[in-house]
Image (cartoon, rainbow, N blue to C red; front, side):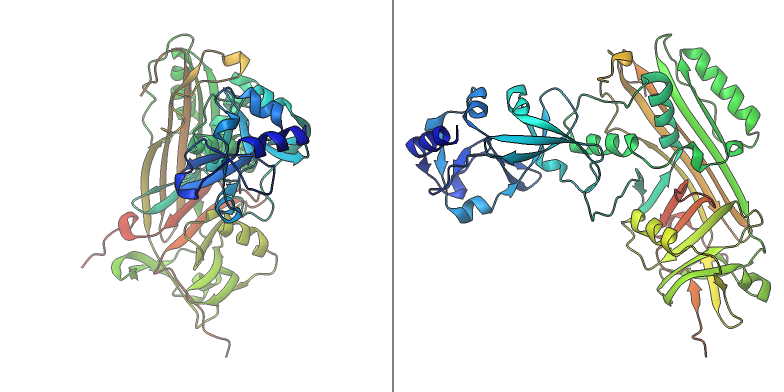
Length: 454
């Protein structure tokens, strides 16, 4: 087979330059039989190896007489792609060539992979690769498993949608949800939801409510039961109109924590603006702040002592504000026994934060399920609401999320320490016995802060 490919490649190859190589072109170099298919996507240029003549001939649009010869440097300017999916399916595989045959690994987590490089292939091509197993997130990649988004420049993540997704997978779809899509953004969301580390085990049962079911009666039940369990729930009742065959998967959680010792209120400076805040004035207040890591006033990681130590709240400054996974990783690494508190001359201050945020997952709305139990269904709506407040006494986070499936159209001395949060910082909340946070907030500007009083 390799000899046949060699003969055909040298017989038909025509010279070409990188500037004339079009999308879908087939190329090789003068001294190598390997044939590649060219792809352009998101400003990048890729090449994928054609495994053997049988694969080549299975694509009716590929013609040997169209094979182009390029220089090695021109070929090297295209990034090798080994990621594929079969036409009509969403599962992504990584291919490994071994002569005229090859192996394929199903990717169970797309973290660390370039989804813009994925090629769509036919069943003949796919069948020339032997099943080798599965692979997860790419090694040495910082696994950003969070599905947060930005509002006015501030990063926001709440775990309610993870709970709603898991409920849908367990009690509606009855397996890992799969969808018909080739969109990289959608595939990234699907992978993160399907393989998210956060589950309801990362919350105490008293703090959440989860429900799924079909028809309008499920909406009525959710509105009634969630209010009964959480009388202070501030989100309004769901007002979706479901057909009897439509389903909803819903999750809500509420966390309210108090510091061991309240702080003193005062105006502070954040990013050069004067805003409402609070600070540690007394010895008891300074003892509230436990130090996980301190480099200088612009690089530190601390947590605040709470009356109920079954939850924890951390504050991180000086870390990459576009990488929540790194901040969480540092917390889990540095959160050890025997942490020291602030000393008498050390300083702590931070702004009050008030968040009221809603989002929809437009990347996933309208996608059709591949799963048999929900054949003919698509995501009709996918919504989330988050409220968060932190002041001198404590913090409160409230988060709800829902997924609606429909068969119709979408629904609508000792160095003095300065723990001064006067520049962008992270707020992370989680259970003490869990490494997976239920809330993350990256405060990048003053849009969530309250103007100082004169």
